[in-house]
Image 1: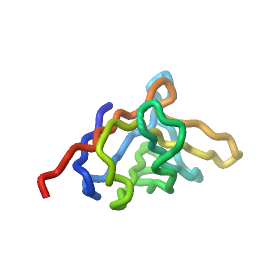
Image 2 (image 1 turned 90 degrees about the vertical axis):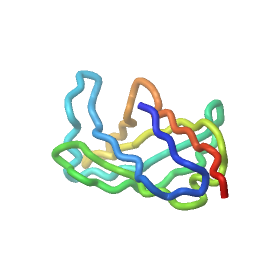
Image 3 (image 1 turned 90 degrees about the horizontal axis):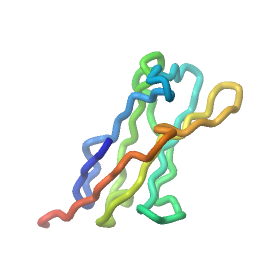
Length: 107
């Protein structure tokens, strides 16, 4: 999955339907979700913030950007981290990252 956004934009949100390795949708009822993003090859998160649950039984969540999230041009990796009711933590996608490109704007 690749997501493109221009520098300093806060829309559109980044939205995902979370699925396990068998492509089964994750039930997010009672869960909390965070969105993480870092530069490709980096080790420090540029974004570590709460995501919004859109449809818990459908596994859909999203993250609403703030201006500081998209102020740097470049290639980034993202993931949604779910904390389940029992305290277990799992990141999605769990076999790769969401590719995020922040591209230049004109003004």
